[in-house]
Image 1: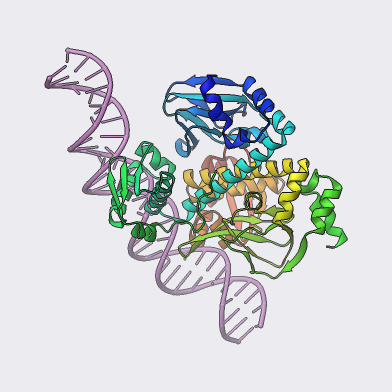
Image 2: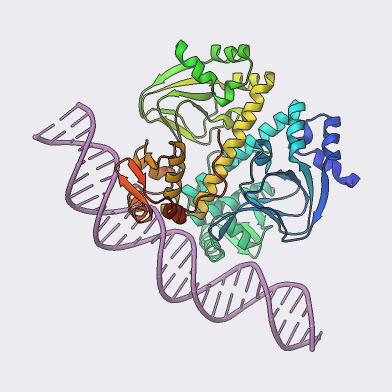
Length: 231
Length: 231
DNA sequence: CGAACCCTTGATGGCGATCAAACGCCGTGG
DNA sequence: CCACGGCGTTTGATCGCCATCAAGGGTTCG
């Protein structure tokens, strides 16, 4: 591991509060590996051997059934993923692939579970991480069940705008076909959904969006009364 | 609290492993309360003041947005609910109402968080509970995104059959309109979905179902390769 | 006995998927 | 430097799943 990236990983909510020596032990037992784009990291059903920490790059978590597949989460650096499978020592429920060349820290699942038992701060951080992830999924599920596609897109735009500084401008980082899959629709319908939002306060120019009428957009998208949690 | 129900609550995965005296402290600080049917226990957006443990009865967790609402989970005794909101000290993301008269143990959220910090076994159980809940939600979300309604119903029947002993018979405990909401469809379409499953190995007689051709049902519903976790 | 309420069945309509084709961007290779 | 090909995106046409609207049958409870 290069010296420069340890601090970044150490600042992860998951590892931030734990003891320094314990954290060193985790790093010592882990592997930092580089993966090319479009590489499958693991597949649904496999036993969870490693906690993954994306240090650099972009990773897609997806699920598939009956030939179809759907994006569950887009992982941006620096963050960990598939913590729940590691904690429970159970098979992955999602598959993962790199979208671009990525550097990933692989922490042996056995080591994670061992350290959790030894370091209460790590256990507490894990518990918190899982609770926040749980809440994210509750939001995602209600979104899918209660809103139609253009409304889901509208809400995503509102959230992204907040996370990107609240300037009224939003830059889409992922490809639109990926965004469509994340939102549970086809690329064709995503395109049409952008068209719909054009009449509700959103201006689209490629990957660059502008909210021209926030009130109109919120009236259309009906954002949740409870704002997304801070991680 | 009556003497007879303490053992049952004590056997909850959440409280099972913790120290006896700590558990007594939790019970001492909690309230066992009886609620009539159809009573709203709390609503989405409210601050999470209590961890709830359903001792007896039936509770529905649901979310609503824009006039519509959808069932997120049907809670059967004995189990706890809204643990994630309590742990994170954040507002509820779901509302809850009793379906029938119910007895519920209300544990002050502040007390839960305090005891978690003091009792590592309780923290570990909480962590595990959240991880399993997380995985349940991943399954629910992929189900919603990848399968159409009759397939979702088929999978639910297969799971229930397993949980009810694998005898080929399934008894539906909840009303069908509730089941429909849980599956993300209307009562009308649930009715039609049962009709469809009639051609795929399922026999319906009111709330009593029989799987007459498991292979056909599985071919139709394509159950997940990873079976539901044991809690 | 009647009034809800749940479940079912039928008819219709809308959202979103699928199929198809054209456009623009970008990298490669001539 | 330009032509070509591939891929992502957009737009249009059609189809299918599911929601909605409507009505009738059965059960429960006052």
